[in-house]
Length: 169
Image: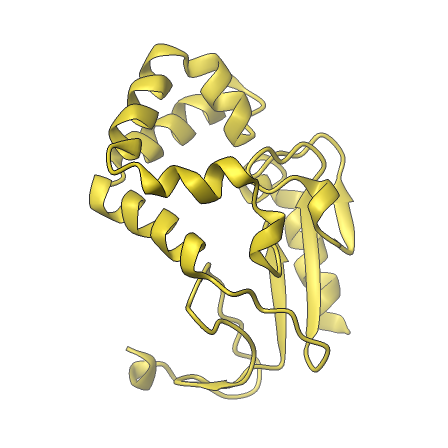
C-alpha cells in the first residue's frame, strides 16, 4: 500500500503500530522524521502486566466483550469515556471489533520490542487517567488533565492543538 501514497514534504501519517522491530528509520513511505504519540508508549514495560498477559488466554476477546455488555459504566470509564455517548461509542467499537483482530493486537503488543530512540524527535501527549497505558509509566510532553486512553475522542481540541504546535516546530 505504501507505494500508492504520494510522499514528500508535508506528509503527516497517523496510526498505531506494534511491529517486531518497531522504530524509526526508512520504510515504504520514506524516512521518518518524527513521531506524534497519542496515548501510546515507547516500550512494552509501559503497558500494564495484565494487558501483556491477557493474550495468553485465547478466549480473552469473548470474555472482555461479555464484561463490556455486563458492566458498561465501568468498561466505558476504563476506556476513557467521559459521557454516556462516548461510552456507548467506545463499547460499540470494541464489540464490533472482530475477535481475531483483537487477539492479534494483544499478540502484537506481547511481541513488540519498543521504539526507544534518541535519533528521532518524539512528540507525546497522554491522558492523565489512562488505564490502558498509565501516565506514570511514560514520558509525555503534555498531559491532558482528566483524559483517558482515547483522548483524541474525548479531548479533540487539545490533541489537535498539540499536533499543530508540533508541526510548527
